[in-house]
Image 1 (cartoon, rainbow, N blue to C red):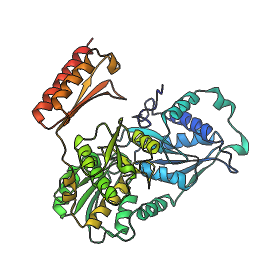
Image 2 (spheres, rainbow, N blue to C red; image 1 turned 135 degrees about the vertical axis):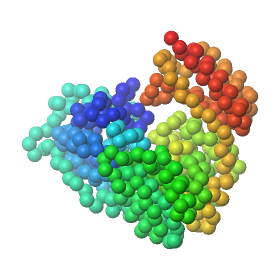
Image 3 (tube, one colour; image 1 turned 180 degrees about the vertical axis):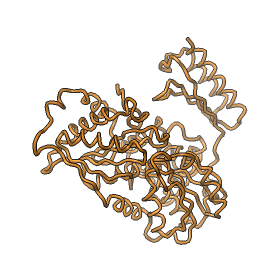
Image 4 (cartoon, helix red, strand yellow; image 1 turned 120 degrees about the vertical axis):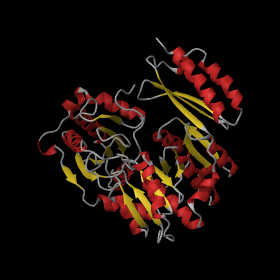
Length: 452
């Protein structure tokens, strides 16, 4: 069982276990050891990117020291979005990639995510192997000396490589000429590359959240606080507002009226367009159990089907790869276009949506009518005894009985948090009062069953 790695790498308060320089150095050593023997006729190398948090400096240096101590070179690209690291890892033929970021968390937190040389996040079993290696005598016994110690290099043209890649993912016959866009980069990892991409494609840009200072990432801005973009869209008369999270792998958009368009609606719009153009493989969209049932009905109505996975964009990607599917994502705005990118990419997703708007010459508010969101309630039940759900006597029977009242137009989801002593209860259906009552019945039952 993994102890450090969660559903999206390691995360916590910077300078507090496990997000310490000591742990970062151990991770660097373990990752270097795991990926250094690739049978190539050159010294192995690992690429490191980060977001704009103050603590990234110390963790970057610790990771680099650990990697170099195992005879592996380090490529430092500075503040770049998480998907940029996935792209650059393959583009520069690195053996692995490391991202230092806590995504949407506040600035005092930080995290570490890992990519293999193919640009995909490491599966659970490899993360478990890294944890086992971190305190293994194997690392000490295999540390090189002399000229075999690794070196670190700064890659100054990394942003330009990623910008060119993103522009090439936008249809060459289209442009953003004259389109007024409000862009919120959350004072995070997209603050340089995102404005450059949209401006070079011709957009009339109003940029927000592009002045990071190490402590203002995600602070009342970005995908977590779309109110800023909503107000700016209405004030400037923009056609669309686009907000990223701190590491740029998520996107939330706002239509020309200032209304929020979440990841489910973006997936519905893009999947319908891909079905119409014969580009959605097996006419199948992959989403998580958290996506609204309205998405499932919209996809079915347009000739496709929805496959659900457990929560986490990595599990969406794993299902896509196993089934040969090419589009999937999460309600939160992680959108994976596997024909272009190996992980969620907020800028890339926004460009795909803009291409549909330009091609169809329709405003986003009209395109978003493809899907009606069913009312949904979510409760987090904090418990002292977070036992497996199957061990909560009678819960399955209660859930089954209550779901019959929803018929086929609603559902109940009960799942434990992967990081907190919390059981999450989500209910959706057509009637707000009904789902509220059902949710409270489940919450009350869990609280009673899990009380000391």
